Image 1 (cartoon, rainbow, N blue to C red):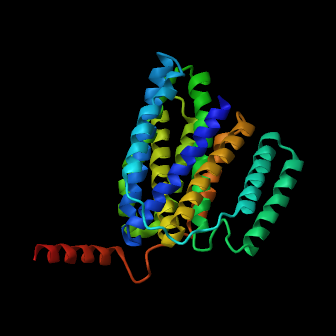
Image 2 (image 1 turned 90 degrees about the vertical axis):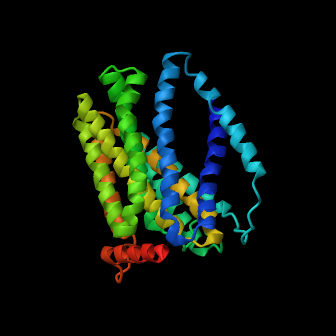
Image 3 (image 1 turned 135 degrees about the vertical axis):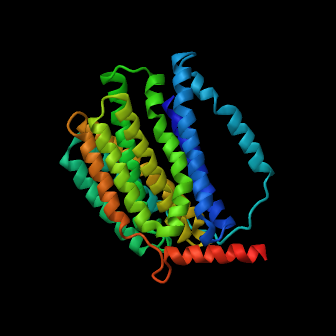
Length: 343
């Protein structure tokens, strides 16, 4: 079963970068906000429906029934993909296999060091990490192209680490401390998915009005507040409020940081940018769950809130609105555009 889950994860990971690459190729940079927001909202809808449906199936037919749900949608969308036209091929990008292996080994040592609390693992992580950075500076086709916004990837790692680690701890709190069954736990987590869906279109507006920097800093602060609230929550209202803050903060920062990564990447590197975005979204949960596992019962949520605060600080280097453009200018521009359309 573990092997099949690995295969499922590998092919699932191949889908996510492709969607961002297609969006970058289909839309100009100044019109990417809304498509990325729609994509994030779709992920939020899945996050809302998945736990509820999974809870019903686990409480009814059993956990094995969950895996049958993916078969029909996978076949339908696979056939639809085959009917689409092949896009114009961009300049091929060489795969940096040594860089990918060094990064994987570095992350493996880091997770081992976090879980086992052994200095040997941390030392090995530093050695392989230094080798990875040295290789990336010298190779002709680096795994992280200079055109891709590195700080935005760091923000995504921090946000996904804080969220995933918090959900890991909250699962134990809901089911073992509070004694809730899977369906009851899913209902209390539902505000997270609802606010994540709602935050996506709101973020598209915020990006246009105040820029990525202020949007991401505020969103990471909201995410940190949600983690701290869940650290103290016991009643239903407090739990729902904490999960709502998590959804609002994470949904917003996911759109904002992803927009920076994809927008500032050339079309020929759009697939690489999408892959790096997805890598950041996968590295974060690994680190967050490792921290939560190590510090379970010893202030894990406080540490994860600190990770979110670090992400807020890192968001301060993201691009804002151009100096010569203000929100008032944007409003006047939209007004002139509507007047032109009426004429």
